[in-house]
Amino acid sequence: MKKKNDRLNPNKSVAGFGDRMNSAAAAKKALLEKFNANKVDVNDPAFLEQQAAQVAAAAARAERDAQKRAEKEAVKAQEIADRKAAQAAAEAQVLADSAALEAAKVEAAAAQVALEAERKAARDARYAARKARK
Image 1 (cartoon, helix red, strand yellow):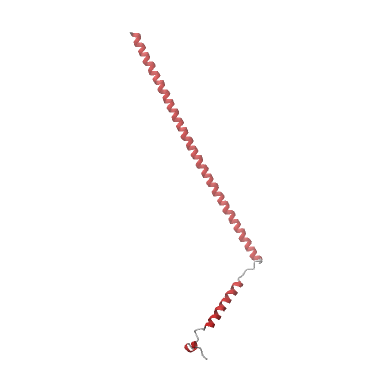
Image 2 (cartoon, rainbow, N blue to C red; image 1 turned 30 degrees about the vertical axis):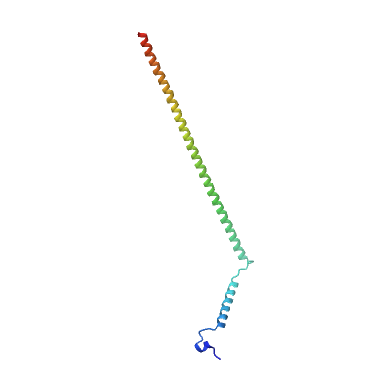
């Protein structure tokens, strides 16, 4: 007895449900065999050597990163110290300038007092001379 598909398609280009299931199972089996063929033996010396090399490279990378981080922190600390030193120098300069300004003011005041004393002495001398002439 012919199937309905056979009667409609004499070339049998359309596969039946069973054929599709069989081909899907065969494809899955082929994929599984391919996967199992590519499995790595963890006790293989070549694999262990490669894994040790990867671990060593990761350790070296971590060491380089730590060293870079330490260098960056050192540079940052140096910059902070330089800024603090520059700020302290600027504050010292401001204090020195204000002290010099105060000294100049005191000196100017002393010169003014001396000038006033000299003027008073000259005025007193003129007054005394005027009294002596009378």
